[in-house]
Length: 460
Image (cartoon, rainbow, N blue to C red; front, side):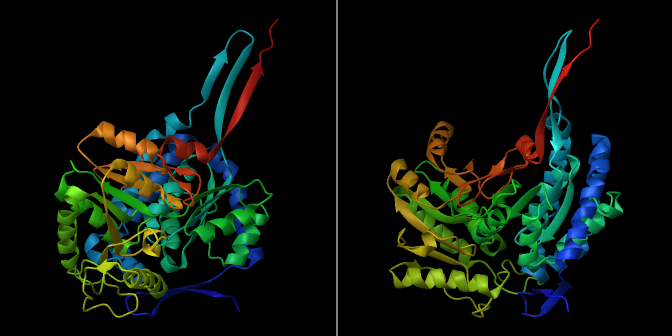
């Protein structure tokens, strides 16, 4: 009997959906079909591929009334927030708009004797392993530009959002993308590793845990398969003495708490200049005390459960350890906090970097706030992390922010905003956040390889 993947709904712990995993042989056959279809897809005109991909994006949007409650059931995001189609469409649309420029030949020179140029050609078959926290937006980051660039795509989605891959593939195929060019797959870890080790794919794009990223790299070792990873973060915010305090509090606390804190670039630690510290903490506590924790199917609820009980257990452990070590917790336990997936959002002060809550990824609704006295102190604390995805700087001085940004070990520097993915910029990281870069022109370059042409003309 086939092993079953089960999506356990965080709402009530019931099995919301289940699917059988493919055997290694069946998975190899699926990957082979993708490889067989890729060359014909790549031979189509770029404008045709782009139009079909954008038709697929629109078909996903047409499903939104079904998608929103389905996401609440699978991973707990309240229905009041309306799903992900806005960002899904924005990212795909931007990549479609820049495709011709990003994929254009680089003309090196032509004279009576030679024509020389560099062409961007598809990697081949791209294996996308997508996470559950923003399951549509994180997947489309790679799926849309990979298909536009002429690759075939095999999508493996997280078990927690088991139905997302099916929906995306169904929508794109209904819009005219050939069914072997874009396929959904259900796999266990061993079969996934065997496919990568067996060179079933030409590129792996993985978004998930550090442990998962290491497993992908180990599976690909010696195959020379390109592996791109985005493995989360411990993203800091720094509020300087000249910051707009209300804007900083509103944005950073929302960045820490939205989606129950389950954001790759969520704010997990905040450093505030001493002159604003007390006011910042007071305003932050007021905001979080105003949240309503409960059933995400209720449109009045502002915070749903975490996606899985084990995720909530890790956040509770970090909070409890910090409080035992001297941290102050400011939010009283909310009525809906059941000790399981429903978790009271928490603000901690009197924290230090000796505490796991300020070092390890929390990926939940908790943030530690520390007082600092200078830019140098703030930079040192921001860099005291194994992760490097984004950093959010709050000041009225653009030059100061840029100068501080140059000193931070991170993938993206924000000034006076946070927790946003601009598709015109490369989404990338450093340290344990992983390597690679999605979206922007660089995203297209990573989903293709350069091929040089040095053509000598026959002259009489």
